[in-house]
Length: 142
Image (cartoon, rainbow, N blue to C red; front, top):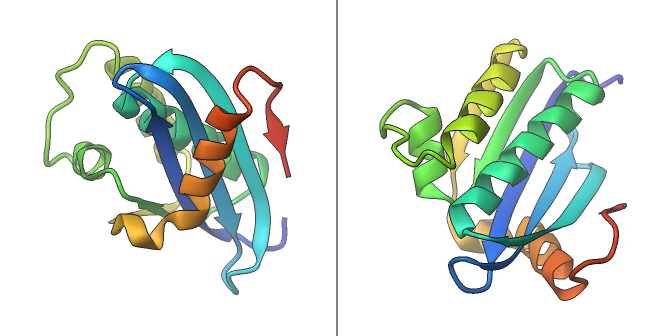
C-alpha cells in the first residue's frame, strides 16, 4: 500500500439492546479518497459489542493494507474513552474485544483516536444499518 496513513470511520449499530446488529467501516487515504468500505451483520448483540467489532475489523483491515498510521473516528464515547484509558473496561463480554483492539493498535506506529459527533459519522452508520437491513446475508466488502 502506498498510503501509510489511513483515516478510518467506524460504527456499530444494534436495533434493541441487545438486538440485530451490524458494523460499518470506511477507510480513506490521507487525501480522503475512499480506499475500502466494509459492513457485516453480527446477529443479535449489544450496541457496545457491535462498536468493538467494528473497531477490531477496522484495525485488522488497516494491518492488511499495510498502514503505519491511522486516525480512528468513532461516535462511541465509551469506546473512545476506554481506548484512551480514561474509562475502565468492566464488561466481561467487551474485555476480549478490547484486548484484541489494543494488541492491533500496538502493532501500528501511530494511532489517533477521535470521538466525533454522530452527524460526522454518517457513512459508517449507513453501512452498519445496511448490514442489519440485509440481515443474514454474507459479509459484503465494497
